[in-house]
Structures are given as structure tokens and as C-alpha cells.
Image 1 (cartoon, rainbow, N blue to C red):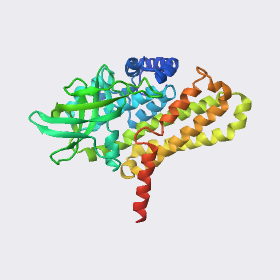
Image 2: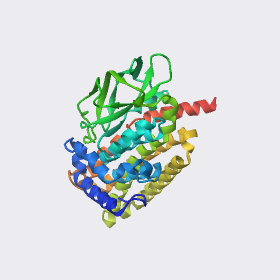
Image 3: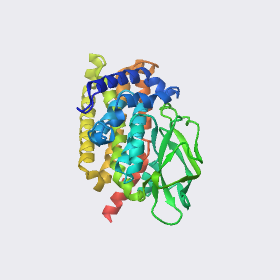
Length: 367
């Protein structure tokens, strides 16, 4: 796994170890929760979460583009691990873009070290921003800050050993919605058992409920949720797209590793998919880097949809190339990648939701 140039030799050794560990445990991470506690420390030791974080805050430098590429690199080995990276690194990005400096300074070191999990519970808020659904959480003024109530049915990286979960709350007094960082050990915070997923079972994915949880200003990430969500959406979706990029790359690599006759038969299809993936990746990274997705979110939605289609095509081609061998367990990971690829269209915001938003956008432009 290569990374930005600022990573030292020792860190590169940790990343080589990480790649080996992920390859050895990718199947277990996908089908059972037994290694869920080990994922975050393994990733942290390799410096994965520090990429794109300023050195002044303990990071290794670089930009959010480097972080997206890192998610893609991890996804080539395990989509479960990449899903965890997405959750942790996206939460870190929230703190980097927050005006709450004390909150950032207090928690960034522990997040980078993997001592606590960062859970991005803003999927509901992203859908709220796009008028897909209302906010599911409520905040009421309290002498010590705000009393928080509500539930979110699906959050990844809710690590049992400790987490901070970001969630957006509607205010009962009519003020702008806020985003809070919710510590796992605060009164009224309840984590469900792990969800009974068909795959990605090592990702510590669970439901979260808060009942009368009282938090003060020190835990408020933003006092203007709509503006903040719009600002972080390119990073949120960009890091998410890194999962698609990495999975598609790995499927195409598997195709390239098949016998000569098989490769020759599907060479044209593989070349087309690879070219499409390269174009989509460049457009994604350039759009995130230059900020153009802030003004053109529809373009980012289109890319997310297009990348999901590319993943489906790449994994489908791998299935053809693997033949009957790919239908056997423990035979090169083809079956696992089919399961992983089935998750890409439904991760929030889902392709159906994005297509609905694009249809509304097109109708608005015509009117």
C-alpha cells in the first residue's frame, strides 16, 4: 500500500504489515464480527487515519484527496476495513472543518491513534439536506446545554470499546439544526447489538439511541447543520467513493491474473472498464481538490452512481474470469467481492436516493 511521500520508512513497514493482515483476514472481517475490535488499532498503527491531517494536529500531511486514495487502497484488500476507514476519517474531517477548536484539539489525537472510534451518523442529515427525509433527532434547551433524543438505525464504527458519534439534531425552539459529537459513555446513550448484516460484519455497525442525553457547547460540532453538511459533503461522498474505486481496482486485478486464454476473451471489456474507472477517479479527485463539487453537488451524485456501475461491471467480469473456481469459498476472494459489491448501491445516500435527487434537479432546470 503506497501513500503520500511524507510517510516515513517505519510507517511504510506498518502499512505493509497492514496489507498482509487484511489479506489474511478479509474473509473473516466480511462474514463474522470476531475481529471487529482489532480493525481500528491495525489501521491506526499503519497511520491510515493521519493521512490528509495537518502535522500540527498530529497528522502526516497531505490533503483529503490523499485520504480518498487511502480508502481506495484499503478497499483493495477488504471493503469491511475500508468502511471503517471511511467512518473514522470522515468523522475526523468533521472536526477538521468545525469551528469548535477545543473539541478538535481534545479528540483528534485519540482518533488518529485509534483509541476511540469516530462514527459518522450524518447519513440522515445528508438526506435531510437533499430533502429526502426529516431529521430523526431532537435537541431541547437544558440548564447544562441541550437534552438530546432520537435514534439512528444504522451507523458504522460504533466500536464497543468506545466511540464518538456525529448526529444532526432539530432544535425544538426553532433555531437552526446543530451537529453534536456524542460520547459513548454519556448518560442516555444506547448502542444496539451489531446489526445482522449479510456481509461487512466486522465493521461494528449498529443502531444508536439517545434518551435525554445532556451535552454542552463543548460537544457541538456545528450550530448550523445545513451549511456544515453542504461544506463537508464532498469529503463525505469522496471518501465513500474511495471504497468503490478500490473494490473495482481489485476486481480488475483479479481479471488480469487469470490465464491467457481467459484474458484474451475479455480483454476489450476489461480495458473499457479500466479506462472508465480511471476517468471517474480523476474527475472525483479533481472535483474534490478544486472545490467545484461545492457548487455542483449533482456532478458528485452522478459520479457516485457511475462508480457504483463500474464496480458492478468489474466484479461481474471477475466472476466470468474466475468461472467455477470463483464460486468456491476461500478461492481468491471472488465470492466475497460479489457480496462487497452488493453493498455499494445501498450505502447512504443510496443510488435510488441519488437518482431521485438528480431527477428533481433536472426537472427544476427545465422549469
